[in-house]
Length: 395
Image (cartoon, rainbow, N blue to C red):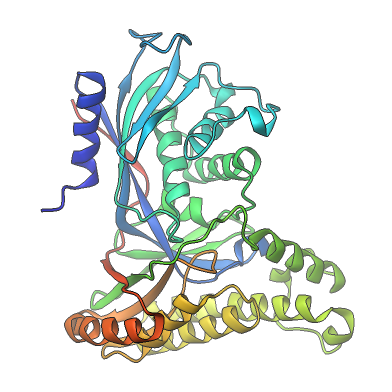
């Protein structure tokens, strides 16, 4: 029997600290249905918070200022996935601490959030982390962690920041402290999720509009088993190429174009031209898919997902062999309306919209088709849309 992350986090806390936690933070993964690489182009995207979650069981530790570490008051977070805890002294390191002196691995995300919150008045706490979110799969495990730590810190300190403020804070931690040049999509989706809905996010105005997900439609996340390293990938290159295209076309961001100008080929190098063509088309797809979902038109939504995958494969060039194999196998399986890769790209997960009544035939057809194409097995997650990052008192 699979033990939920929430229960595992509580058990881990008791084992690590010998007492009961007082609060539980839940932070969901997210999958982006359409609108990929549009967030840092001030564009639109359509993510959904899903029922794969990261949980932190915690309690204030004012009564244990040293807790055996010899560093005074601190935040301490143990994880079921790593024997080395994340320990952040209070006050946290200065914002200008050079990268070599910062924490490493997952602890750097924890530390980065604490650094961003330093001016708000942090209190010491102990926590234990457990997660059902596959690491490196493009489902925003890092954003879920950032938001969970941010909510834990602010709640225990008596603060209640707005979701958008929390998302911006978490993004700064990832951009500035960790060094990953991500947009705001992941953090907004994780913190702003609404049960039963996808989110139409305008990344310029930060307006979030819930769009109902049809009850008979399943969001199936396909973990291809391939993995990438975001910080060392070509993600930053794509961001720079988009900025270059926008400058050459005389607009603040590619969001500001509804179509390529007639002379675009003479104003842009071939790479920037492909990037701009994808972002402009992808931005337009978001509202078409949102409208289709709102009226229950799964066929139109699925068709646009497939078009988005072709664009991200051919013009944005961030797909990969396993992702292409997953989309081909899914789109050919019964009950599937459409599929595409999701996340930053190169590896990780694809997403498919599938008729809930045909999940059995879909799975039976998908697995052998994918294995034949990719030479490996995939893991299918049938997901529901859930609420965003939250904290609950346990006693």
